[in-house]
Image (cartoon, rainbow, N blue to C red; front, side):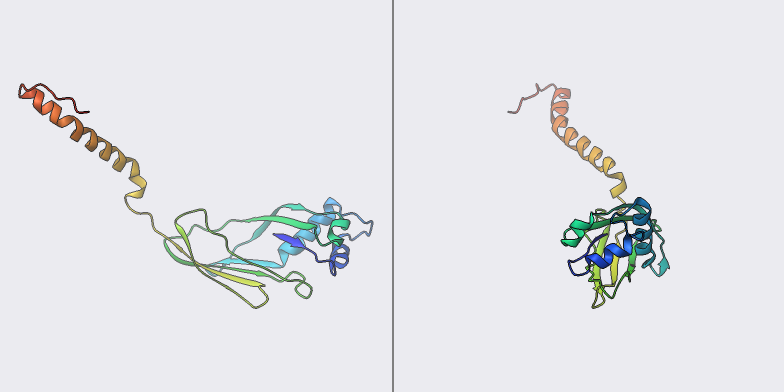
Length: 178
């Protein structure tokens, strides 16, 4: 998650983070603020809550924030239960500093080809995002692709070599095709 405080709210956001008012964001202050942000988020899959865990945070200097170009970068992880083939839903809510925040929430194209995004819905302020998705079942032959490739290769070799072998057995000299 990237949080970029605009010029008008950057001093207020910096004060929320810099609790000892020394003009710097210490590691402890950054961690505490990141935990506040993560506490204000909710994630669920198929109606069941999924805890979010903070794994990394990066904070810009106050000068960058005051110019509106310094992004707070928070990275988290969630262990999502394995999904069976069929339709599913992910729900995400972010209520962190909603009175001064503008949100943009999107689902990206999945890397896994078995997951297909069916739709996305957001509330007007984009505090909430619901993603409907489908898990496409494994084709029965997909896991044994090597067997299909092997049989196809053997078939091509058999068709290519078979006439030569047949001709040789009949006493006819093999022809070389070019």
